[in-house]
Image 1 (spheres, helix red, strand yellow):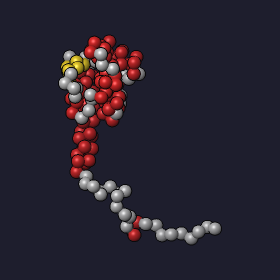
Image 2 (cartoon, rainbow, N blue to C red):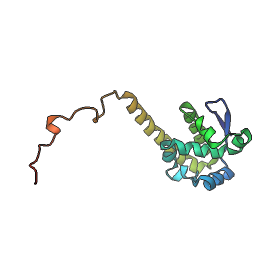
Image 3 (tube, one colour):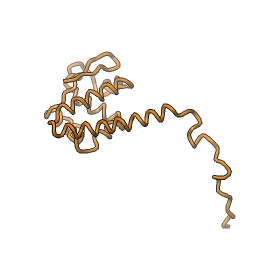
Image 4 (tube, one colour):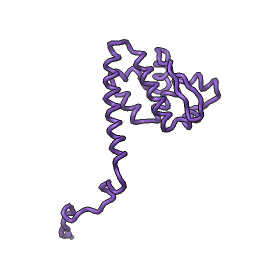
Length: 150
């Protein structure tokens, strides 16, 4: 069992076992087993709302005991908390799989993390005005006016 702390300082325990996999499937229609063979990593990395929904389902019994709704939980999932919680989920998923599947899942996770680092690095190095939408087109790239067909 691994844990993360939300933006309100509450600690949440994440456990992935067969019961949790079934609960996430039943409530969200998300198959956590796709992390080894499917596109789940990409979906979780690209959709923070899906990530938070999965985490909430995994932490639901704790949330119920604390009187925390899914909306309350979501409000406390921002920035570094999302990074920490995502890492906890990935570690817990890796620990769930038998060794034969664990290596394949780990390779996918590492590849996806590299893609996201590259995207973040690219965004961090952009300066205002770098976007093609912000600068006027050059005369060479502007098509010549064509005669009206009227």
